[in-house]
Image (cartoon, rainbow, N blue to C red; front, side):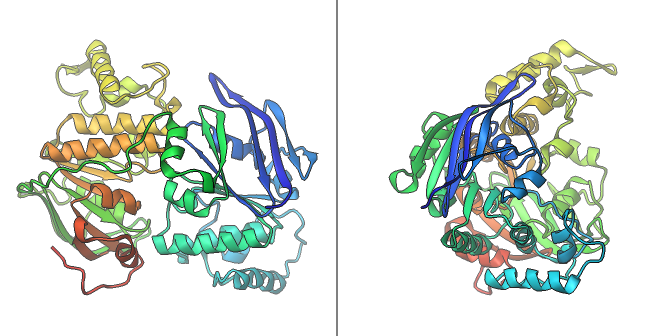
Length: 508
């Protein structure tokens, strides 16, 4: 590793009531991959947004190659050679690859030489074996290809310091391997990379050095070769973390959910589910694996009544619930942890109490004669907070002030407490730190052991393999295989997630 190319000194950032970064010191060297680890709310994103010019620190300085840098916008960051690739891509779906790459560039002439730009894009694409077509529309590309567009966009603009925020969250294992090869190639060319990830196995594979943040402070910086996953997890959360969870033997009960040849269209009017069939039994976790955009979200919506099925049937406890009203399905015993906790699961501006009672405010003891007994509602919420170890600033504060992990705990607590026949959990630990992830997986195993049927939809194969009893893989709206978890492995599931039909996968 070479000289220090970026140095953050005593970076402090305050928001109302929150000290997000507390005198953080961090440096990045030429030709290294430096990983930033920390719990939700530890201050990682705040620090990266300061380096990218989205926030400005209350105290502290940033130095680029030893010289003080004044970074007040992403344009300033790019002038210093810093490019950030966000977890949620900053692309316009209806524009081409070329148009997205030059969008917002200050130095473009009035007449754009598209051939010259396309040639430069192809040159970068060929160098890293991206196989990008400059005139393809973004919506036509896979998630992995869209991520490559983001990388090319930064390289096109001259970035030699790249910040990648949770870059593998939406990728198959094969796509992740390909990304790591690209990052290692960039490193060998002298580029410097800041890598943010919650997946400790990835961190140990890709990093040179690792800096751990906890509650806005740097806990330490270690060389990858001098640490291990268990030590890193302990640095992150301040206690030992279990990487293997005890799973009791399966006690499969009666069939709770039956999905029979279900078909549906997505919001664009394109068929997204194509004759989907599977079942989930009492006392089992059925894990559904797949890369984002292959119909998982729409499937959960069809089962919960939030989207109309155009073919096939859905049965709950033997009764046909196809296209019934969501309230009818909910009252029949289906509870739902949606993928977007803030847009669908919770109401951001309502308090923890109001969010906790969203399912029960019509019923006694909380609801009576059309009125809410707020004393009972508060007692109910306080009980959830205690049982699920939910950290809230104030019980009557807006739920949007909670960290991601605590929001998810509140959402899960609300859905589990009713003891439904079927719990549908979509990406229940996405974006959560190892401590919150461990807690939520334990809770899912507990409800499975209590006899509840659980449909777990996740892109995290480690999670699917750790707590599922059977695993189905969805690709382009079809089930490409269903296997017993004990017979599954990451490589085979990854191939199925990428659309490889495997005739040897037994369908149960």
